[in-house]
Image (cartoon, rainbow, N blue to C red; front, side, top):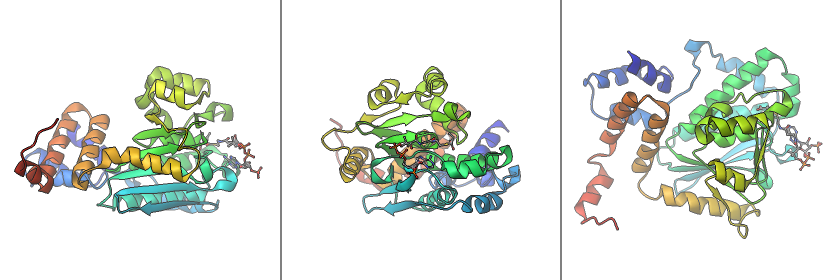
Length: 321
Ligand SMILES: CC[C@H](C(=O)O)C(=O)SCCNC(=O)CCNC(=O)[C@H](O)C(C)(C)COP(=O)(O)OP(=O)(O)OC[C@H]1O[C@@H](n2cnc3c(N)ncnc32)[C@H](O)[C@@H]1OP(=O)(O)O
């Protein structure tokens, strides 16, 4: 019962039948893992009273900017938060577009990696304050927060290795967005700052929950309590940043992206089914209780065992030096 509930949580209430059957040994090995490899669902569903259509319509009333997605032959996609006139702040329509781009990435079965960047050399300054002012009542705020928690949870659960490329400022919701990626690369001069306290708020896009898992409770408390500006050096020290980009390459847009692609390429090298399986077992390991994660790992293992990459490796005399 506990196992089913936890898996249902990850699956957003769908595909539970296949999952339950497999736990009892009744379905084809790997069937559940295949579902996991396509991305594993929302936190809030219609069954839990989430009125997605209504929220989308409300958000669309605050237009501006765009969320641009380019899927590349290399298997690495680039998602650009594009609203430079407002330092890449998220308008309502951009929140809706983000969710649509996540849906497109969930369907991209050849994908291995994702880089999220801001346009024009700065990452993202959070919610568009003009929209925030217009919906500054608790009901609308909760709706926006629910929508963004779903979108960012699905983003983090994608079977792609994801990187936030932080040039310039990642503030408020922009800082929260960086935590919805597996890795953070910071350019010299980059800043990640949860400014929520200064706004009389706490993070609402899931950024606090994710931050605690990345840097631990003590560091998260300091970052939120002090609205600390985290520079690349401090980012590395507390485990928020995975790498500081080279000064010689960074700061000039295309070069920073190139460097991020090279860095990510070390981890996405290899066949897509294997890379996606790796991400999937890590997602289940970090989100599920151990016994459930072990079952999931077995399912995903069943999707690669005896697969083309595995058979090819077995056919050669492997020496891992
Ligand atoms: C916190 C909760 C919430 C959430 O989680 O959902 C949020 O994210 S609320 C938003 C939190 N972010 C901010 O409060 C950022 C405020 N802006 C700044 O601190 C600065 O603008 C900065 C540091 C991003 C850039 O400073 P700089 O001196 O380089 O440029 P400007 O200030 O002149 O900005 C240029 C232009 O962009 C507009 N701008 C910047 N951020 C936002 C924003 N979040 N929403 C709307 N507009 C934004 C700024 O007003 C300027 O416009 P202009 O018409 O030229 O005055």
